[in-house]
Each structure stands twice: as structure tokens, then as C-alpha cells.
Amino acid sequence: MIQTSLRKALHAATGPMTLDIQLDVLTGEFLAITGASGSGKTTLLRLLAGLEKPEEGRILVDGTVWLDSARGIQLPIQDRRVGLVFQEYALFPNMTVRENLEYGLGKGQSKAIIDELIGITELEQLLGRYPAKLSGGQQQRVALARALVRRPKLLLLDEPLSALDSRMRERLQNYILKVHQAFSLTTLLVSHDHREIFKLADRVISLKQGKISQPDLPETVQYANVSDGTFRLSGEVLQLEEAGSGFSISVLIGTNVLRVPARMEDLRRLQPGDRVEILVDTQHAMLIKT
Amino acid sequence: MDSGFAQTLLLTFQLAAVTTVLLLFIGVPLAFLLSRTQSRFKPILEALISMPLVLPPTVLGFYLLLAFSPRSALGNWLVETANIRLVFSFAGLVIGSLIYSLPFMVQPIQSGFESLPKHLREASYSLGKSVWQTLLRVELPNIKPAVLTGVVLAFAHTVGEFGVILMIGGNIPGETRVASIAIYDEVEALNYGIANQYALVLVLFAFAILALVYTINRRMLRTA
Image 1 (cartoon, helix red, strand yellow):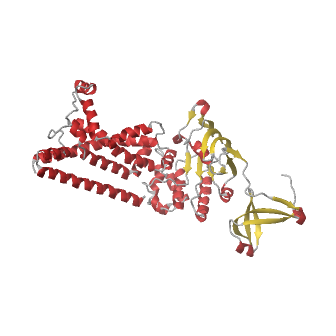
Image 2 (cartoon, chains in turn orange, purple; image 1 turned 45 degrees about the vertical axis):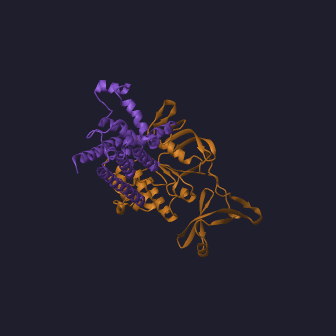
């Protein structure tokens, strides 16, 4: 369990504001953080990592105090055991892939973890190369593996995939999910990509002007249109896939993903990212208390 | 080529070598601190370090002469306590050169540090590495061309020093008579032939060193 309470004055592009966040994250949880740029997402990660200092706050990780401004405790980043992945990869240009990974080893730590990570992130072919000779996706895979060498408790991902194209992004999402589960990590991901968030995260929070707000629904749901007896749900196509003998389309509506059966001609007309409306007959709608 | 010629050139390069090695140990930490500090005194410190770039060397030499003179408090104290005389001595030249060439060492290295993305060191810290380990294993290796530029420029600039040495070193063969002083001296004595030899060596040296710096910089651009 990670309990945080942080306050820090910021000077965003939009003017001064105060980051003021109370946030509890369960051990093993995958939490996504979204929000407009300048809303304090990156600062929140940097405060957790120990790269910045709050005016006031407390961070408690599994009973260990990382930060307590009232008692003057401020664990340096080196002692916090966090894995950090930046959008810009931040691999060390003077080291090969293997050297980048081995750099993360602690004193006397066994090299077994390196081989395990190389296996999981499939870096076998790249070990002797320098970062300059790697594609963006490959670099980010190395950065992800490197962030886990110390076996961190907390993995902090700051828009790790936004510089990559959509195919690469999807592959890397799978790696992120894989390591999150394999190492029982608690992961915080800053992302703007709703599809990414719904694929990876257990929970999502949205920051607005330095405070946690309800996630903004990307689309408003239009409620029952009584005159023609249908609900109209508008959303975005996430994925087209085969489902048994037919096809199905995953549609992101608000914070939910609906899987809708589809016909062949729908598949031809639609692609991920398209806006669609789903019409549901109100006569068949049922309410069940949960 | 007479022994005086060789002795003078040897002394010139000795002075430059000693100065450069010492400057490396002073310049790297100074550049590192300047690239990191958020202090409001940073511009003051930067201005102080860069003063030799704009001051006439004779001004610097004049103040050093006053400070080193056994009649000054500092000079007197040095003679009394350690029996060190800085005026008209090699040690004095080294100190003068350190101040005179300092900006040439500090500026390239500082801009090298500043050009490194801060995420590199933050990634290193997050991997449990200290500021010192990060400096030695991540930051310095990635600004090698900048360090090399600083070294080469500081060395070359010290070789080309004239005004400061004239003020505090004089013209003692084997002790303070360096090539630039020797040229001046030989011309005064109408020995144009020897002056020409010195001058030619310095011209070739300057050209070689600058060609080296630009080659390094070009290679750096290509690999970046």
C-alpha cells in the first residue's frame, strides 16, 4: 500500500497553481494518471521518485516512510527503490544495451535478474548495440528492462509510449503488462491515450490544476431517446477482432469498453479511432441492482 | 638549432602541460557546479571566471605582480612561511596561467554538462547511483569531446600567453623565458632569424591544434 499526501506550489504555463494530492495506491495496482498538460502529472511522479521536494507531504510505502516533511524525513531517490521510465528513454549513450542494464545492478546483486529481464523484454539480439543504433521502441524496451534491474517496488512511467507509432505502442503495452505482472509491481502510468489506459490500468485518476478530479468522460452518453425508443451511445472504435465465427468491435464509451458484434461490412468501413454510435433498443434494457 | 631555442620551447610546453593538468582538476568541478547551481551568484562567478577573456593580459599581470611581490602582504607571507617566491619564477607563471586560461577550460565543459539531458542523471540516480558515480560513469564519458576541447584550448592558450608572463615572469632562460617572450626579445635584438623559427613553430602548433579541435567537434556532431 502506498499512501501519499503532497502539496507543492507550481509555476505552470497557465500561471501559478498548487499541486495538492491525496492518493492511496494498492500494492500490485496499475494506476493510470491522465489530465491536460501542465496539470501536475509529471510533478506527481517526480515527487514520488524523490526528484522533487514538496512543501509539505508524506509518502508511506508498505509501512516505510519515504517522506515526512513534518518529521524532516526525505529519503533520497537512490534509497527509494523506484523504477523510472521517461518518454525520452534516457539510455546512457556511452554504454551498450547490456552495459545499460548492468549499470543498474546494486553492489553484490546477482546478474540473474539481467538475464531474466532480457528474456522477458526479448533483448537478446540487441545486447551489444549502442542506444544510437536502436529504434525508439527498442530503446524504450531497454529503458523498461533497466528500470527493473533493482527490483523496484514502484514503477513510474511518464508517458513512456507517446513518442512511438501505434503498432510499436501496442507491442510495448504488452511488455509493460508482462513485467507488471511478472514482478508484482505497483505501477503508475502517465498517459493521454485512453485506449492505452483501458488496456493496462486497473484504475484511472485525472488531474486538473494540480488536484485529483473525476476522470473527464471523453464522450457524454446521450440517454434514452424516447421518441424512437433507443439509447444512443457514442464512442470510439478501439479494436476490430474475430469472435468465434463472427467479428466484434470494441468501442470505448466514457470509461467503459463495450464489445459489439459486427458484420463483415462494418469491418471494412471502420478502423480504430473512428467515431461511432451504438443504438440500443430501450425495450430490452434491464436494470439490476449490484 | 641552439640549446637556448630548445630550452625555451621545452619550457613553453612544460608550462602549458602543468597548467592544463591542474586546470582539468579545477575546471571540471567548477564547470559541474556552474552547470547545476541555481544560485543568484552564478552570473557573478561566471563573470569572474571569464574576465581574462576581455581584460588586457597586462592588467591581470599587473595585479598579480602586486600580489606576488615580497613587499605585498601575500607575497611576504609566502616568502616568510614557505620560502616561495612567485614573482619571476616558474611557479608564479603557473598560477598566472591558471587564472588566464581558466575560462578556456571551464566554458566548453560547462556547456557540455548543460547540453546533457537531465533525464540521464535522473535515470542514474533512480538506479541507486550517487552524484559522484553518475558524474564519473555517465556524465563525463558522454561529454568527452567537450572535455577534450577544453584541454586543447587551455593548452594552446597557455602556449600563446604573453602579457601576463611579461609582467610577472620576465625573461629568465630556463625559468620564465617562454616562446612568445623569446620572439619579442629576439626582435628587439634584431635577431629576425631566431624570431622567425619561434614564430613558425607557434604558427604550425596553433594550426594543428585548431584543426584537431574542429575535427573532434565534427565527429561529435556526426555521432550525436
